[in-house]
Length: 181
Image (tube, rainbow, N blue to C red; front, side, top):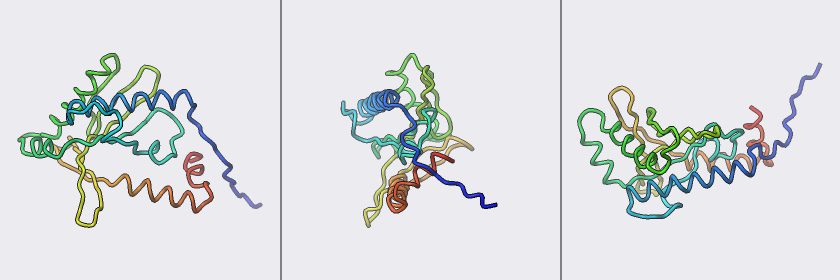
C-alpha cells in the first residue's frame, strides 16, 4: 500500500493578538538594550528575530528568539576580564532587560537572557557583537558562560536567507513542512 504523506498549507499558527504582543515586547527589549549600551532610545535598531520565529517556521510562542547587537567596545571590556567575563556580560544585559520587565522572570542561561512572561510567551535574547570581513560577510560573536566562559560565532542572516530562498523554490511549502514537523 502506498503511504504518502502530503503536506498541506499550514497558514499562520500564531494568533494576530500574540504576534502584536510579541512585537510590542520585542520593541521594548530593543529599546532597553539601546538605552543601556548605545545611548539611543530607538526601539528598532540593533536587533532582529532569529530562530524559528525569525525563519518564519514558529508554531508556538514558547520560544521567541531575538539577537541584540552590542557595541564592539563592550566585547573588548568583557573579553579582557578574568574568570568568565561572558557571565558578567550576560548579567549586564539581563539587568538592562529586568529594569523594564521587573514583574517578569528574567534570568541568564548559558548564551541567552530568558524572559518568561506570565502569559506563557518566552523570549530568549542573544546579545552579540557584529563582525564584518573584507568581503562584507557578517557574523555575530555571542557569549557562552558554560565551562568557564568562551565566545561563539553565528550567522543567522545567512540561515534566514537560505530558508527564504528554499521556501520560494518549493512554492512556499518548506516553511509549512517545518511547521508540521
